[in-house]
Amino acid sequence: MGQFLLKRLLYGFLVLIGVIVINFFLFNILPGDPARMMLGQRADITSVEAINKDLGRDKPLLTQFFNYLNDLSPISIHNDVNTASYWYLDPLKYTSFVKLIPVSKKAVLVLKKPYLRRSYQSKKQVGEILMEGFVNTIILAIVAMTFAIFLGIIFGIICAVKKNSFIDRIFLVLSVFGMSLPSFFAAILVAWIFAFVLGKYTGLNMAGSLFSVDDFGKGEYLDLKNLILPAFTLGIRPLAIVVELTRNSLLEVLSQDYIRTARAKGLSKFRILMRHALKNAMNPVVTAMSGWLASLLAGAVFIEYIFDWKGIGLVIVNALEKYDFPVLMGAVLFISIILVIINILVDIVYGMLDPRVRLQ
Image (spheres, helix red, strand yellow):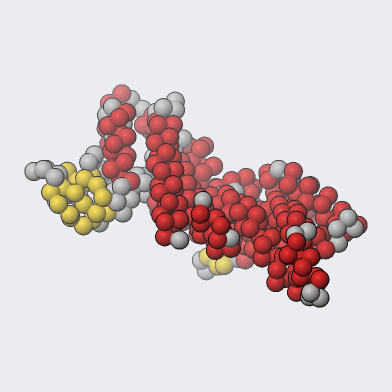
């Protein structure tokens, strides 16, 4: 198990290295000058050069890349310990660090938190912006996946037990419809039906986040009803996939020789289904759901934008509109880390369910 885990960690690390390289060069060769976008109509050559120097964009691209790696690395180089500035000057950087060993007379190796730089527009640290959105996104994703997995497994079992029945065919048609329905269209449709047409009966809002502002000036309060529609919309496609996977996998397992042996021994259908068939049928479901959970945690961009849910998806949309490259780069890297971590955890769970996986 130790060698299996070590191999998965190595694969995840290599994936992150590839993402970092592509992420940096992709956003730094795109057209557009952040300095001119920050200054707007007030832009002049002197001001543009001063801002580019402050952002470190006046240096060669390869030097900028190494500076970026130095910012991301938890073990990196300071060139001025007294002022706690990193290899290129940025006074708004996270300044807490632990001194390790001197590298030269002016540089020292330090231990620090990875730094994702700061937003071109708000000047806030990208890490703070992403963490603010991450809390809302993870709540939305977990609720959506819980809804999808719980109902999907139940409906999938019903379809497998009632194979080729009217109920089975109805669920299969609805599953195909759910998988083919685009997220942005589903969000608009759900918001229109349940918040506009039936709004006076449901009491739901077309837009809103986890916290709402009190009309009487008492600050923010937790508004859980705003979670219902985006979570339901976000869970439609995973629900359809879980139903299909559970049904097909369970039917395949039920046709195996050991299931026929269990029936011959006189075990009840319920015990065969729950004790023997369902556990082995869950492997494909767990594998598929890992990818979906990672995608949902990464931020359902269209759904968060339409419902005005203040998560990572909405952060990405706002950053795209304003060409805020540090926020976009940080979001891509953050999403990749989530994806790698979830895949490693799923591999561990998969290895526990099926020991043969550890030998691969």
